[in-house]
Length: 412
Image 1 (cartoon, rainbow, N blue to C red):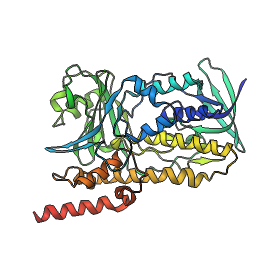
Image 2 (cartoon, helix red, strand yellow):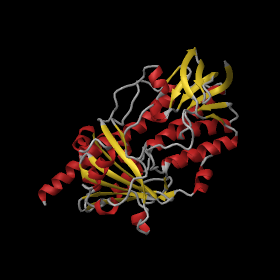
Image 3 (cartoon, rainbow, N blue to C red):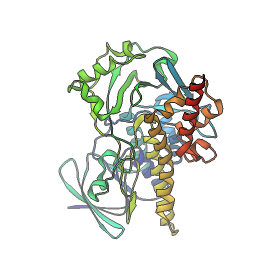
Image 4 (cartoon, one colour):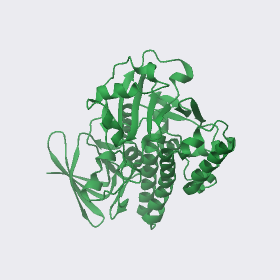
């Protein structure tokens, strides 16, 4: 059996893995990445938020993405019946990026991987993890490549960035009940030949059909657009079992977007993903750490996936460097506590979106502009900024504001 030796083994070449790999490589650490798929490969999670720009920049990947020419995203729009709530990232509380991108993930992920390879990071594509064994903090991982050959990889530490592959979560039995109630999703792409010019053809939009049922529209710079629905799992049972027919039936229920998409053919048969949220019992152990969706995935409603993936990948890499430089790392405090603080803020916003409380705030006809700026900063991903009361008091502030709106409506 062929053997490889690497200081750090990274499982998965998605955004989290590439941020970790690039940052570690820049610091002179030998990294080996194994990726089950062949790139470019389809992946959902196409809308980014500004906070991830900081992570890409620190990892040395931002310029490559800028050169790729993806569709710039300056904010987001929410529509429900005749109500509209629109957020401009340049009008947010605090500092930070005021734009990002919406991307075909196959192209975006491939862009990051190619840049990491250009820097000198070794990536083994079409290579599947078969088994992982730990001996203290060291590990022996058996992988199988495209030729069917088994390779043993010895590493001092493993970063599991395998996303929904959840390699270590499965092998070490770390799966846990998600924080967010079970929702499912169905999505596809269209080639939007008659896309409107200007804002209507550039701005991502979420159309709300019911409190817990919503549709997304993400236009890409290549002329294609992503369409998808998210709803409680049971909601999908009322539609055809054929995903293509079901998608057309769902589009027929839209109000704002109904006529715009009904004539288009789908570029691929719509994909249904059941129970999309994920969670684990622990984020690290002796010799490993979980990052990105391999650790936890909340819900796609506020596009937090790539932001948390890159933030956790970058932080894990920094702590590995710190540890290898001889300093003690308290992974529970410096990694778990920090990541969980951000996840918990976003989790509150996702829960209050589905409870309806956040929707009352977003669709208020005369919003308080300072409050809107503070909520906008959260939607931009700056969920660790304690100067923002909508971060600091997230566990009750949305409910309190929603009650005030109800009282205002009752008295008018």
